[in-house]
Structure formats: C-alpha cells, structure tokens
Image (cartoon, rainbow, N blue to C red; front, top):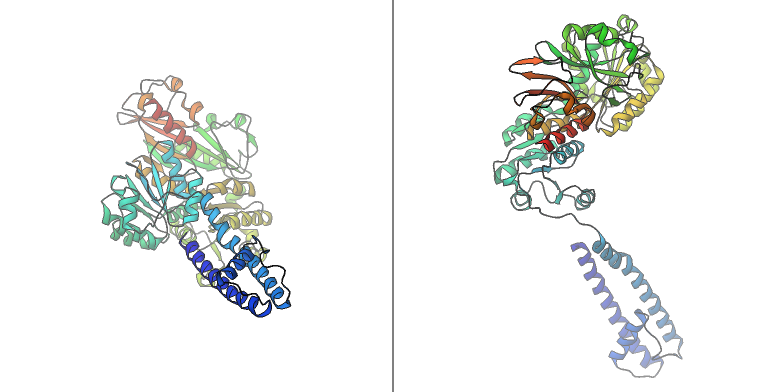
Length: 546
C-alpha cells in the first residue's frame, strides 16, 4: 500500500504540472491566434475539461490551425494519462481492497508456533488438528501468508526473527512450543530471538547435521536432522536384503518384533494370493497389514495378490520372522547381489554410503551425482541412460535414489526400471504426495522425508512415545483411555480406525496373543500400528472416548 501511495503522489504531481503548462500555452494561444483575451482560470478550466473528457464546447470552434493542433495534442495527452492511471493506480487499489490479507496477530494459548511453512509443518498441523490443539504459522511474505490463510490454515504475517512477533503477535509466552523450520541459519536466529522473549521450548531442524551444536548453543530444546535418519533407514533396506538378520526390526519386548518385509521377485510368496500364502501356518507370524503399490491395507483381503511390489507388515517372535523373511527373499537375488548405485550425494546420500560401509558386508557401491565437486564415481544426471549404463545399471542389485527433487526422482525411477526390470529401487521423497507416484513408477520402497519430520515433531510436542520414525507404518505406545474395561471385539479398533493392536504390555509382561475377547485394563499399554492417517483417527477415537 505504501508503494501505491508513493506512485499516486508522483502521478498527481506530474498531472498538475502538465495541466499548468497546457493552461499557460492555451491562454497565450487564445490571445495570439484567436484574438480572444481570456482569463488564466478559464484557460485552466478548458484544459481540465479536455483531460477529463467532460467537454470542449466553451471555446470551439477555433479558427487558427495552431489552436486546433494544440487542442488535438491536449486530447491525446489527456487520454494517455487516463489510461496510464488505470493499470498503475486504479486497478491495484481495487485489487488491494478485494484481496484477502493474512492477520498480523492472533489471540491463542497452549498452542504451537511454527516459524516457516514446509511439508513437515503441514504434517505436524494435521496431527495438531486431529487432537484439537491450536497452532499458528509465522510467514514473512505477505502474498504467501495470504495464500496460506485462504487454505484455512491459521497464519500471521510477521517476521520470524522479530521479538515483537513472538511477544505481541503470537503469544509465545503462553505456547507449548516453537518450531523453527526456515533454514539452518535462520532457525538459529529464530531460537535466539524466541529465548529473549520467554522460556518456551524451541524445536529446530538442520539440513547439515554438524550444525546441530550451534542450534543447541542458541538455546534450542531439541534439534532434528531427519535427512540423516532417512539415509540410515534407506541403507538398512539394502543391508537387510543381503543379510538374513532382521536388522530393521522394531523390538517391542520379550523377543517380540514388528518388521516390514519387502517381497522380492521370484520368492516363494511372489504371485501368491494372501489366502494361499500360508504365512500364519508356516511361520506363526501375524500379518498386520501390507503395502500394495504404495497403498496400505489392514488387514489385506484373502484374495489379494502378493507380488514383488508388496511390503508386508508383520509381527512375531524373532524365529518366526526369520522364517517369514526366508519366504519373501528370492534365491536368485541372494545368489546375485550386484552392486549398489547411490544417486545423489547430499546429506541423505552420504549417510547411505557411510551406513552401508559401516555394515561391513562388503557390498560394492557406485555413486552418481551431477556436481563434480562431490567426487562421485560417475558424474552426471541419473535420468540420463548413458550415465546409468556407466554406473553399471544392468548388473546392479539395488539403486538408491536420494535426490532432493521429487519430480526428478519419479522420472529416474521410470528410467531405471526400464533399463533393469529386476533391480531393487529404494527412494526418498520430499513430500508424502510423491510416495504413491514413486510406487506407480516402479519403486520397491519409498520413505517420505516430510512424514519422518512430522512424526518427530508430533512425538516431541505431544509427548507421545513413537517407537519408530522411519518405518512406513507408525508404531505408538499409548494407554487405552476410556477403551479400558472393553474387549478388543467391543472396541472394534481395526474396523473403526484401520489401526491394529499389535501387543499389550501388562504388569511388565508383553501379551502378543490377542483375541476379540481380550479385555483392556486401565493400566495396560497398547502397542498400536497404522498409517499416519489411521493413527490420527485412532487418537481422535480415544480422545472422543476420553
């Protein structure tokens, strides 16, 4: 608005000067060429009438060609200035009046303040909305703040590094926590600013893990580096495919684990319907659910076909899960491991390379990156067929796509799958929306950075015990709330929420054999598995019961 005001003042000043000059020339011309002495005020009136197109008849017609030319020039000048005023002054004024502006302050308490708006912030907001916890996003860009506001997200237009923003505009003193999610340097500055105002916990993110210490020095309560965790998780998918050990299993207690097992092409389960798989009869393990091309189903239908793009989520004792893993692995894949191609040497890619080396399984790696300074084995674009062939894609056993751009990752998946239909493709995604695309493109395993980050935030702020951040299905440990004293059949948790009660911890013992008649005690701890959305639904149900 200030810019519009300055532009208007300059325009009016120019218009006033031009009219005065024309009035002087017109007054002189009427006396010199028309022999008609008129007052200067009359000359100014004629100029105003001409510029505003409100009339020309008071002195018309003019007998001299000089005055006719002058009037023609005045007409053109007036039209030009009017059309100039419309786009530069009038239209912006109407747009400003009709546009929706984000507020500059909110009156909240016991809320979460989020500095910056990213995919992980959106994941956190979904968790907060499900639990009825208020929040506010601080966005410095006016237009972006307006867009966020129009999407029904609570936002204020303010500077995330300003003391006034936290003290006067978002009530940080009465907030549960502040999440700094802009960039590494700004997050540290936000922390220093916020700690000047009050002692509300500050949670920050870092893209570069070595910078964690500086955020802690700035006063951050918790510092997360989700890219490092994602890299370690992606590496685990490779090492567990070679090793017969259940390295990525999540131990619940008493030797009882939950694990995701990808079904490999050519394994005993590949091409078999769930009803004919005999998983329970052969291994004793329980199938909690399964991913079919990126879609989680719990429980899977008996006639659903298991193939090489299926990932089983199973629970059981270690010996049972090891036997089930044998059924999911291909003898051909076990005989021909092939090397690993790691595409993208950012924080995620470097973590993958280091984790595979540290595993000590002697698996050769070929790295690919577009930046020559990364000193990759192959320098070039992983979507380029020649680059992939130079990396030995035809002989590779696994390709890990740790690229920062989801569009490029999807395209690279298509190219890799075309060149080597048998290779295992493990990919990271920036946003949850890209996960389904990557599975459809041919990826075998996809991990969303936004999902991992959102889980980290939610578990810290809401003080929930999340057993794992990096699995595709979330596992939480929680009390039964008002579901206590009901049987599992009466609670009907799976049908109402899509979640599965994997086990119940009671008096220090883990109960894994759960039937519909199992009754929940108030002091029980439930281990619940489900997708992010299903866990939110479960939390809402327990909250409604409370």
